[in-house]
Image 1 (cartoon, rainbow, N blue to C red):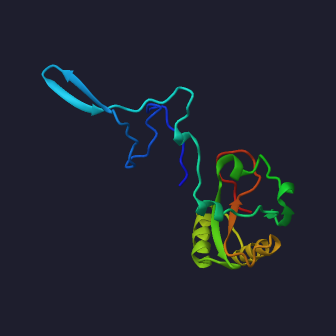
Image 2 (cartoon, one colour):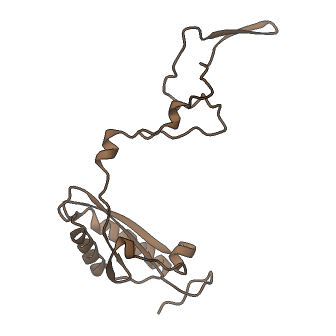
Image 3 (spheres, one colour):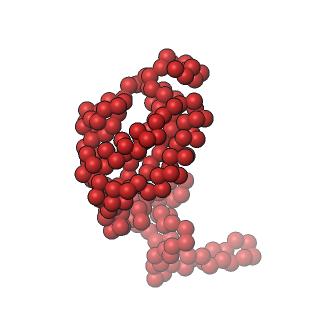
Length: 179
């Protein structure tokens, strides 16, 4: 479980997620009298001003550290396989400027793309809605090529992120005419 910091809308000491028990001190009862009513409530434990709440420290479960992916060394961009540090996307790309594109993440287990037909159908539907053509057979070969070039073709688990955009076009808000 990854814990996050407190929001400012809550007091600093109230960092515990809902439903989890809060620590109690031995003398934590307070009696308050308002008019004719007397209420007994629990006193919040005081924390030294210099101490940070425990929720400010991030912790990761052992499962999270087991699933870390190796760094990607080869990417496929605009028809070429490149080293990741050499890949550059134009600031005039419509996907960068306007989100004019479709992305899909496909897991691969031991080199086999998981539910590839469903991922392909979803991507095809999204690209058709935007009027962007693409070659499905070529995309499958690119995905397999990326797994092989990154040494993940036999990895227990790998993820391939595909971003298809319209590319560089004049900066207007209307979709460009298809070629």
